[in-house]
Length: 329
Image 1 (cartoon, helix red, strand yellow):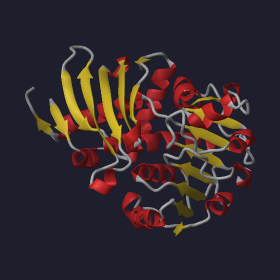
Image 2 (spheres, helix red, strand yellow):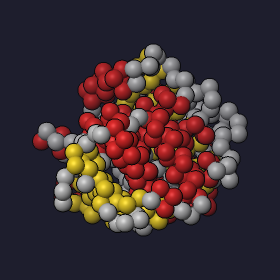
Image 3 (tube, rainbow, N blue to C red):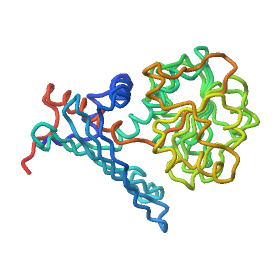
Image 4 (cartoon, helix red, strand yellow):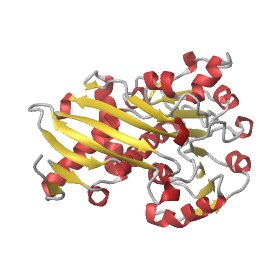
């Protein structure tokens, strides 16, 4: 079995790779060529933490995987990462275990890449301003993907703890060295949202993080932080103002996306309002943005085959370049 660390994966695999691999995987999924059982979530309420077990198999590439990822928000105070995990990769022709990959970086990268794909189809071509709400580890790949697919000139950063936003601002040149625009740390999130073409919500909030009433025409929103039924990053006004709401998977959104579950239970919104899944945009079975005035929203709760798609290509690259550590098990 090949063991691959985060450092090794970073040398092998880029945001551009991830976007390309995930667009291909979305098409495989549309064709019914991916097996993706519902993931198991184990919550640890006293720690406000959770562990996710996510299996999948992709016949066209001959690989299967299970990702085990944990999210412990209080870890930074102990000098540990909030998100940790591994991806175990198998060959579906022989059943042979092929690799064990660090999952933390790949989880962030693939989540950013999926938002990048959604932004490519749903944001205005002329989008130039971004507000990033939540400046944790997941935010890095979110911003990186947006900077890759759109010509952004202004970035606004908001975090409940201001110093975290300031620290994130210092990282942006490392995250995306090609970015030459401005970066501002803001204290009034709604003012920033009102000026932005793209909003990225990357928090674990249980209450909406901005007011939908301040959204300007033509805004696109990516929501990736709330992934459990009690979490909510956007308010019902945002949903009602959107002309197109797209999800990574309908099944996952129905069971895990509090942004939808909470207003539906209150009788304020319905899942029938969804425009489609992200794969529908990639396959052209559903329309992307049609006018510069539309407000659009992409919601991602994550799905296992996203991890499989990126892990499989990382493995192939590592084998071809002789990177990683082989161990007998």
